Length: 67
Image (tube, one colour):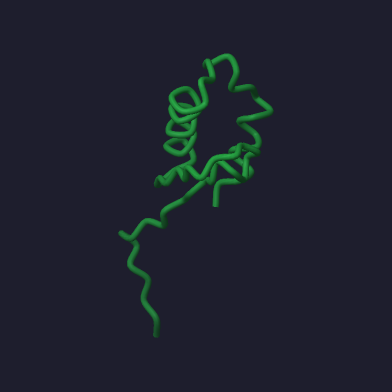
């Protein structure tokens, strides 16, 4: 019988390009919340976006592309 190690977390990721940007940045994390925080920081740092530019629509695109 195959045993699954419950302590092993699956890493989630989101590719910036999949959200519509011409960018090869990939965010990896253990939770949606972690991905969202990293994606927001990336958007501000590398795409010059302000927090108010990260709309609910954009957040929805990001969430839909977390795998």
